[in-house]
Length: 430
Image 1 (spheres, rainbow, N blue to C red):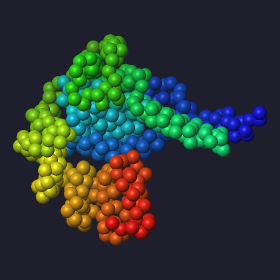
Image 2 (cartoon, helix red, strand yellow; image 1 turned 45 degrees about the horizontal axis):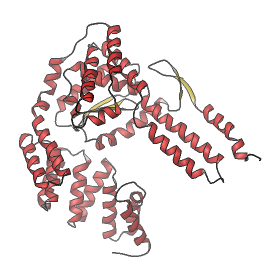
Image 3 (spheres, helix red, strand yellow; image 1 turned 180 degrees about the vertical axis):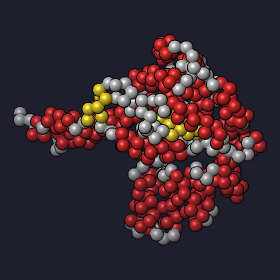
Image 4 (cartoon, rainbow, N blue to C red; image 1 turned 120 degrees about the vertical axis):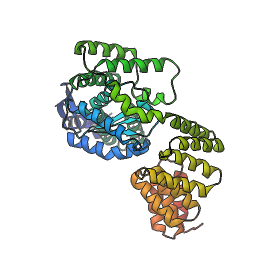
């Protein structure tokens, strides 16, 4: 049987795809590797994704500017002695109870409020930040992008080779699934690499590398026992293991004794956040109550949190969510007014307030809030709401433009958006 010409071309197409790849040297490890993503592209990816990533993870914790500045100073002291000090590093603390930290390509790094509670000193903070700096400096995030690029190249080649065979759709589904799988978390080697070189950065910056040993020991203890709420996210992306503890001990031994732990400085920087911990614990109980449809209980906990720390916007958001469910829309809007005033750079209170105004028929105010929310973080909810406003105003073309991306999304509103598009295009108006 004669092989189709498209299949005969497959080896040549694959060879061309690989020849298009650049061959470079990893700036941290010195090892040779394929490199699709340039440094400029790394920086562009990080810059473009940093804001939306912050928004989707609770927003910047602006209640403690001195703490945020302190974390940034520690991070920059490590970045300056890293293997890629020229990257435009940034460090932020996010208003998120989940104990976690992450890095984007180009040196954009975040640590959650919830993780800071689990640290004892500045050396442990340096271990966290040094680890994330290596993820950026060693191009771990860029490599994930490159794996996606390789999959996309393979997808294009498969598309040519299977054209006309009826297998193209199946091949595309398989490649997309593979792309999703390789980006779920960093692998074992990347984690060990980030520990090892992060400890070197710690030593260069004057920190005791034993802080990294103590940090991993604590995480192993937490993972072996009953995990506190939220640690599953940290351990999914940064799995602890005795192997990592032992490797850190060997690295610390090679680096030698000495260095500071910075305990006193860390405790001073954390003092107000620790004083406010009961308020955040009340808030967490309120969130749990909301998730269990216990709205009066959630409102009680939100008020307790506000009593303990009135300037935290998320506490007022929780109160608004409970008040809305308890059919107290005017009270909910007042709570959201306060939340917006406390954190004007966070999307969620605008989204909540805009949705409430839309339900009450205040279209102009709703449009303003939903537009701001979408500028901060585009969501299906805000986009659908803007489509609904345009539909109510009789602007069908604008309504369709808003409904269309929602209809093509994976959100719960997708089916309703498709229904509305179908009705509007048929000339039906509810």
